Length: 190
Image (tube, rainbow, N blue to C red):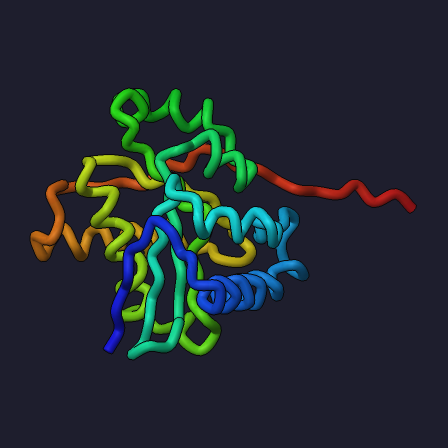
């Protein structure tokens, strides 16, 4: 049975180490495909985030086996900066949500490799995260690599729409707004 546990602090050292190991495993292959490092947390920062109550953690289990993790925070200065996002640009585009402290940044979302392509597992992880943002009529902000995960925004929006259609949310509509088109390039001289 798939279960998502929502926590403000993960103090279990064994679970912390397992999440860290799988975080590294999830993002390691991207080192060869993306211009920007997709691992926004170094080890000490990651372990600090796991116990920092500004971050809400969503830990996914199949029976009692860890299979996925996501985190979000409304502390944009902390969470967005960790992912190299610009909180000023985000808040200027979402003035109402910012004034109500209802912008939630998603700095990390991943599943262990054998579950990565299973939509029902993604739904089990993203669903509770979306429902948390929905509780506040907030906005979910995130960044992603078009090389590594080009469908992330569509997948999150799919979950939002699915939850809205089944009346599991307070909100009735959702749309994705692209904030930036960052490009990493090289001019090769020969």
